[in-house]
Image 1 (tube, rainbow, N blue to C red):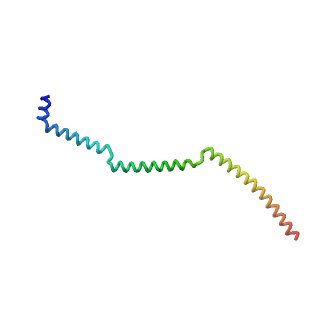
Image 2: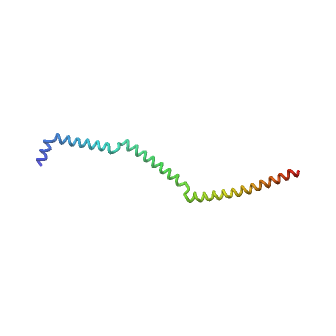
Image 3: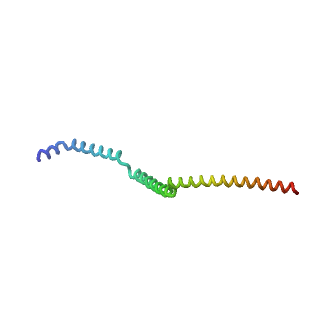
Length: 109
């Protein structure tokens, strides 16, 4: 034990430099490795803002119809389109008949 103490006493200057350099190196490594408090707070704020946006988007996505609902709507619209074509054809026939009736009335007068 006396040898260790005598070694420390005789080489204290060099040992303190080595320990000091190791401390400075560790501090520099830590400074480069970890963000500062300001950077951490900025990142935390941006992550919380992104989290809120994700929750808003999820809420909006709940109201979007599913694949099956879109398919049913497409079939219903296709059926309405076909019905509309049938009604349009019937209306065109009625329009021709009313034109003929009006023409006959005007000729007869």
